Image 1 (cartoon, rainbow, N blue to C red):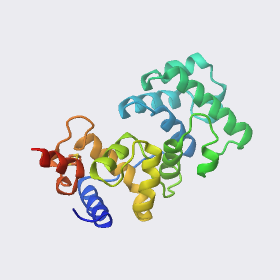
Image 2 (image 1 turned 135 degrees about the horizontal axis):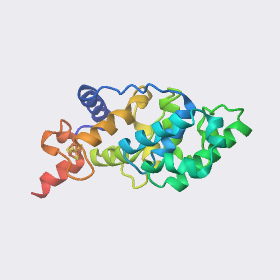
Image 3 (image 1 turned 30 degrees about the vertical axis):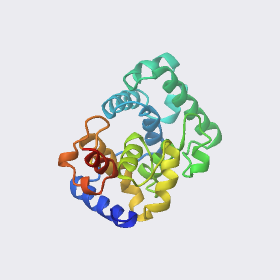
Amino acid sequence: MIKIPERIERIMEELRGLYKLRVFEDKDPYRVLIRTILSQRTRDENTDQATLKLFNKYPDMEDVALAPQDKLEKLVKSAGFYRVKSKRIKEVSHILMDDYNGVVPDTMEELLKLPGVGRKTANCVLVYAFEKPAIPVDTHVHRISNRLGLVNSKEPDKTELELEKIIPKTYWIELNDLMVQFGQDICRPIGPKHEECPLAEICDYYQDILNQK
Ligand code: SF4
């Protein structure tokens, strides 16, 4: 099996060949933050729907902070866990207005102080709003990194720390988006398409399956 640095080069080359980086039109930090909170434990389509409805009705931070709770719940319902999520986005909006002058912070340390913001959400804001190098580890990045044998970790936060040690910083910004597309398309949680995967020969998970046959 090839060594980790070469494996990483090969993975990035293949993923870059397969997928284009998706252009995130709305890089407004507040919207990225709220969208990411809404995206927790749900699918992209549901997040998109909830985000669109929310910002159509309440376009900015102050609107969301002052919106009645029941109205927010209705608007973000499609994202699931809508009671908790609507409470969080209202609370976050209040805190940003009161303590941060209406400006979303651009450091991990400050972002983690906001309710409902863990490392994944904070890293998404750093990458997708501020274009700072960071590795948001969602379910796809966690699963794929373990399957490929880049890390050996049960916790996404640990996966992030392990990936940061081995992935060159120049790849950090694109890693999440490329792996999410790969995870939705080929290396799916259930029924991964090993036969059509360009990384099969360097994948620990698949090589184990072959060795057991
Ligand atoms: S070979 Fe299978 S498990 Fe490995 S990366 Fe490809 S799809 Fe995922």
